[in-house]
Length: 167
Ligand code: NI
Image (cartoon, rainbow, N blue to C red):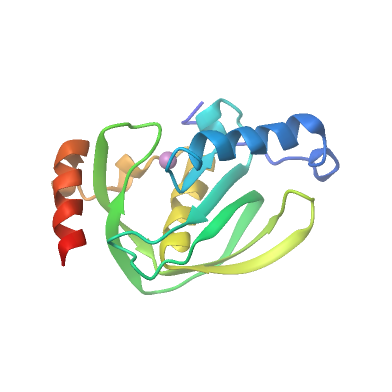
């Protein structure tokens, strides 16, 4: 499932109970438990839906608190040339963290959970989470593109995190 390309959601289906329940379930699973994002293939639905959210952390101390937002059938229309190397993890790879290079900003079109067409530019942590979750819809895992020298266990990561928090 995680290696498949996810299928677009038909617009007429977005307001159906099963899709709305799936979105609520993803928010509960992926964000309410301390994460910042989750994609439908991670809950065994090969559909183009993901959730992104944001909150301050030691790598993105200025990240605003953004409540979970559903992104459906996304298309990336532009990416900044500037990139940023920072830490990522994934619910599908518990206990592993690594540093991944991502574009600093991403502009995309997508449908929201009401089926409305949107265009938005995401920056900082949200841009990183967007790219991580977008990759899930293409069957790409963060571990495929992590700088291999930077893989650490959760325990080592927590140590690095504590050091960064003291700065
Ligand atoms: Ni992930």
